[in-house]
Amino acid sequence: MALRHPLTFFGAVASVTLAVVELWREEPVLNRASVTLAWTMLPMAAAFALIAGGAVHRARGRSDAQPPMIMPLGMEQRTSGLLLGISFAGAFATFVLQLALLVWLFTRDDAASLVWNEILVGLVYVMFAAALGAAIARWISHPSSSLISILTLIGLMIAVPYRQGDWGQLIGPEWLLPMAWPQEIVPYEVAFRPAGLHLVYLGGLTLLVAATAVLGRWAAGWTLLVLGGSLAVPTGVAQLGPIAETRQSSVIEQLVGDNADLTCETQGQATYCALAGYERWIPLWIESAEPILEAAPAGTTSGIEVRQYPTVNPLTASDPFEQLDQWWFDALARDIRARPRVVAVGVVWADYAAFPLAHTLARVIAGCGVQCDGEAQTFAFLWLAAHNPGIRSIVEGNIGGDTAPIADCMVAEAWRLSSGRTLMHANWDAVIDPTTSYEEAGALLGIEVPAPVDEFGQTGDGCE
Image 1 (cartoon, helix red, strand yellow):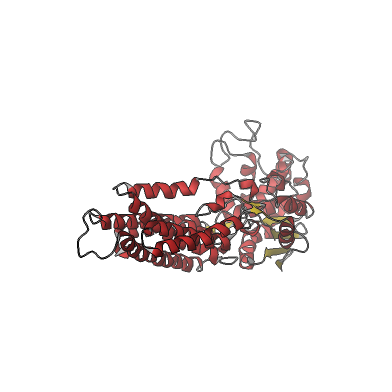
Image 2: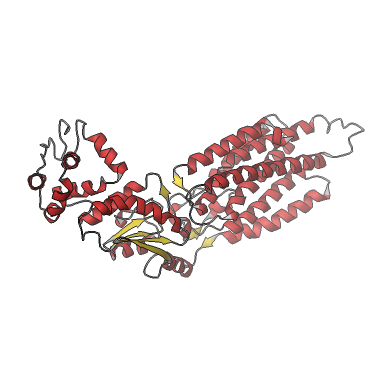
């Protein structure tokens, strides 16, 4: 029985491990996780390709050369029985795995919505792999047929390279492959993945390969071949082609600009705005931002807006000019330039995402751009950012080193002063002036400034 085969166990463990590794560090974005749940079923697909191939190879035996009188079925009919049982067993096992992973995802701070057309691709792909293993074993009567099946599956994953710059503007020939890979650098909201058509296309391919496995004098095999072709050919072609500019523009208008579909919540002097489906993440942003906002001098946080944009990099866009050259990013960059008090967040929230949010927020309050222009301003920015516990632990771990930056040392010294925050607030305007040096800021705050040993502001003996 296929479900009790050792390869089923190993494939299941490998698929679950791969899915957990991919999704562990991120609060799940369900539309992207739907794609991940499909492609991480590849080990399960390989397992069932081997199981099906082995079963068909054993069924061949010597029965074709010396068929016994008690064998009423031809090879094509025997193959169809094996393929039917094994492929449905693979689909059931995949369904159970994906369901268990979904339960795990729903215990976390998920956002967006599941895309069932994406998830089901993994299930159908396992059936496709079983059909492929059976077809190769049917027509290549050799013990190496299982290895050929695996090599074929690998080849079908890499046969057509993805052109990343075209995503969201063109559906390219890579979508003719059975499995469409996740696109990690493109937000799902602007990827325009033809998920529904591709699922039907993959179903047609599966029927075509299954028909190849059972072809012979049996009429059902030819009927299956015609049915698979009638599904695969038109849907495969229908996937491809350019995305209309009107569709691109309408999507961008919902994501970027004054008319974007946002849910906003104001807490203190800051406003937090999430894209549709991401409202559950607002408390995460507040938790990361509050320590910095509370540490900032009065009046310096007015008008701060933590605003979500369709960008994958967890919390980007303090520098919208350094992003990848993607079609949707011009609108994003223009919008950020028009909002000098915006702190841009992305559509992925990973366990490291609090650090970019804290850095960007501190830069905005300290009046810095992508980099701070002055020495004391750099110290002020870092002093604010380090009120995030994660960043503070990094700074504290660095100040005892042989090459601790001067700003790190000054921040550590400011923490030791009971009046450190009071002095920072009293001298804030002078400290964030780009012309103020480390030494001048130290004199204002009563902080000892270590001497640099190189042009990059490093100190030779740490600062403890």
